[in-house]
Length: 125
Image 1 (cartoon, rainbow, N blue to C red):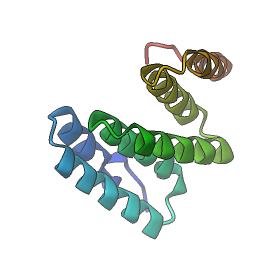
Image 2 (image 1 turned 120 degrees about the vertical axis):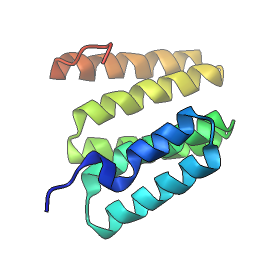
Image 3 (image 1 turned 60 degrees about the horizontal axis):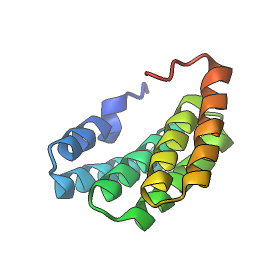
């Protein structure tokens, strides 16, 4: 069975988040997370955790956001998902900076840069 990005509700959840419809975004992200778990699609979980973190961040729930980012990062590293690792590190750095953790943010940005350089990914996308 071929897996695709829309199957685990990420596009719908991200669209709702960008529209400021956070309850719907959370609902879609939670459904997607449950579906991915049910189907054993572990490679989708880090992105879904990042999405859940971004929704929490948009709602001002910084502690919850960091919990999702940390869980996503651990899983991305475990699964060798370097692109998602870089995205999670960049998001964590932004959250740390927002919380006034400048040194931690700088260190996390450096780790993200190292991953981006290692995989040949451009910092712009």
